[in-house]
Length: 178
Image (cartoon, rainbow, N blue to C red; front, side, top):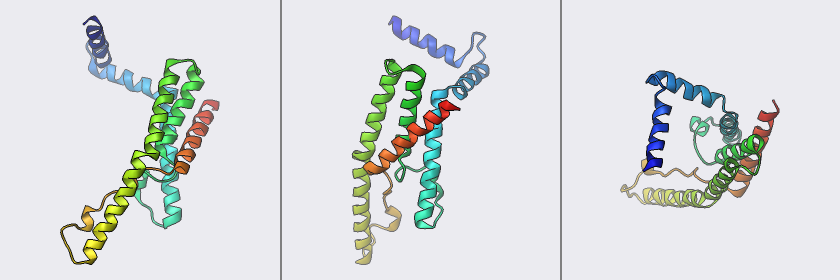
């Protein structure tokens, strides 16, 4: 109960400053976030991966698809780039013996494992179901239409995850050099 009350007090101080001014407290939060080098390195890893993903898709398909700027799946994995930039920045900021590094590393492992495993399988299943919808359409059945098409860019190949991981480490290391 004592810990819960302390947690509520901390939450209250995040939302309101000592004078009860919510706007000023929120500005302090965002100012702190924009000065957080670990957060900025991770966000930059995501941004660069998304831009590269869009350019690679444009190069191979000769079509600009704006969804690639924010979408999941594809080359390189922006999830991997983000979490590996996070791990690298945390290591550079706090060292490998810190709790922050341990948490960042475990989260990175889970995210990359999920991208290769569950999310990739979901994308493969979406391709199969979309092929079935096409077959039904070709047979003249209209219970399912192209509008019901499932998103196929969901997971990643191990190579896409590896490239995202390398990109994330590289981005964070460069960020900390500058």
